[in-house]
Amino acid sequence: MNRAMSSLAMSASLVLASCAGGPPLSKGKPFDLTPPQQRLAPGIQFSQRLWPGPVPMQVSIVEVDLTTRDLGLVVGGIAADAKGEYLSRTTSSFVRDTGAVVAINGGYFSPVVNAEGQALDAIGFSKSGGLLQSPPNTAQTAGMATAVVCFKRREIAILATFSCPDRFTDGLAAGPILVAAGKVVTDVKNTTRHPRSAIGMNARGDRLWLITIDGRQPGYSEGASFEETARILVALGATEALNLDGGGSTALVARDGSGKPRQLNRPIQGGVPGRERPVANHIGVFELSRPIR
Image 1 (cartoon, rainbow, N blue to C red):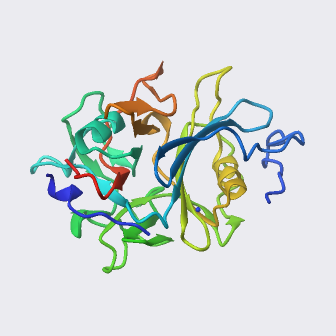
Image 2 (image 1 turned 180 degrees about the horizontal axis):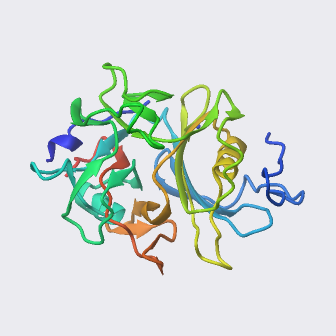
């Protein structure tokens, strides 16, 4: 087992508003909070919803009940040699290789590649199993990676810092923070819509949401701005939320009944719907009763 996968960590009523500089997010139709849900594993539910508004936004949602004892979270990636911190891998390959119930792409990285097994550097902090995989940013090099999500057993924190406190075994840098103390805090002037990935949690720390919003697919899903992504998370119940890497990196994948990976959203690497981008690291949800491969 890769050392970056050696630790598990556990610890997610909106009044619809207008997007700054753009058309209203909703024309009064409520966000359907009770669509048919599919159970991926005990404590893990999946649903897909169309956010009401002026353009189509397909939202794929995984909700994790963190009171479920058999569940754990991992920040994982393939540790590379001296040429890079990680080797590139798609989210589907991560699920297939590790046996995760579900996984979402993680933080920012460089360079963007089209093939798996290429050397990548994570942009900012990344820690797995108590081992530092990528050092923290400085204020001069952070870009959008100005915050972290941190895990240790049942404890989860989303912090506006460049690294996780030492007590956390796993974490990664991303950004910007979308929601803090139940309030949308992201830059409302940024109205550009792209595919988005994000993680959110509720105030009690017993619910976690992993969401993707498909984009760059006219007529199916246009993508979302940072503010729209934040408002979707608040509608679900998140009081803290962090934007992850998006665009062609956006991918949410589950393990099917035969153990094979199944895409829950529609990625769009290189303009091809359904194609996944190989990325540096992932956030995975695992059943503790099943060994991590």
